[in-house]
Length: 57
Image 1 (cartoon, rainbow, N blue to C red):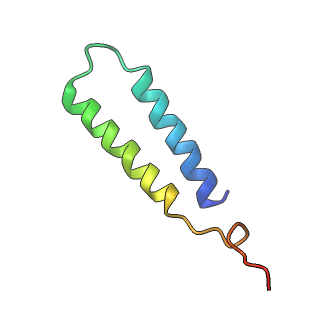
Image 2: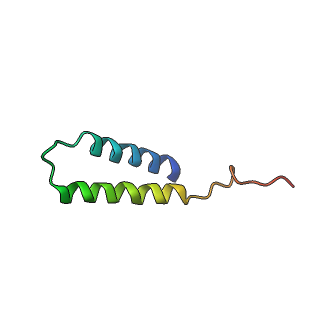
């Protein structure tokens, strides 16, 4: 599995966890989950894909 696929899967899991968190989830935990989501998003957006970024000769 490519790193992009792994990150996309981890990002979806993180989003689902945040969206489905019980209302009594401590703020500190939610903040950590949101920080993780942000970190995954930044990493995914920073990936360089050779196939997508090839320039015609």
